[in-house]
Image (cartoon, rainbow, N blue to C red; front, top):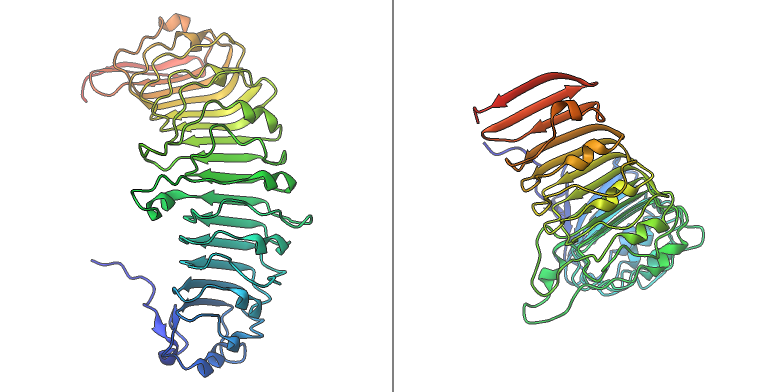
Length: 389
């Protein structure tokens, strides 16, 4: 049975005050926009599909609207009319086909959240520089943007997500054009805490121009790799530049080794997911301390070893690492509080139980004919051979 969803959009001419989304095009009677003003329309949100060359001037003075969602038709190539909504707090823009977001300065002094998505042509977002109240900015599938603008010195931006995603699909198959993004202006955003970067193959290492204020960094691939434009990192050395970093997530990129020394950096979370060629994670054990380490879907990881046995890790969680065989090194470490391994190789080697005393909490599980071992607070509660699966 089909699940109920929002009602379909209706033309402004048929709007009765209950519809979720309103379409305004060349057939719409623009004089009827007045039914949406604060005297007639109690909602503070608008969802518009605009198939005109500009935002109609009949929206001037819509001070009651705080949330606006705009889907743009091909003719709408200038969004200067956003100034008709001076009290916006949240704005979403989709399918914009202009090259410059706005030809006029935007005076949206209350805007805190902005999301821009699915624009093949948008290249210039300089107008965002004046949005001093902006706390959260998300840009996805906008492959023509090559430079992040220099924001106002008083910018309060704290959350930034730039996801090229499937933007590569916009380019013709015959072209060699690759993603490019200059992030050097981020260094001036001293309140920025969360950064998500996805789908940009122009980075061969973690960018060195991020503000020192960041606490969370997520670096993502696309979930797939194309032959001519792989997302491949040489190393993670530049993590050392960010002393306030507490979370680092790496997903769906190519990275052969995590090496080096990160002894000055403490993390709450380190997550490595779908790093298909990762074979060496020795650098993980050099951090000053890590709360949780999650390593999943890294099929070339066979051995876990390092020269540093003093690593401090609260939880070391391996999942779907089906070539992992030798974990002897882990039981030589004195400060791993909890170890969980699921879906490892059926040839997983472990020492005798009496030698597994350094880690007080352990879960080892291999699917199929194999074993499940469980220890809690240094007491082996379950030691059983699992042949049922």
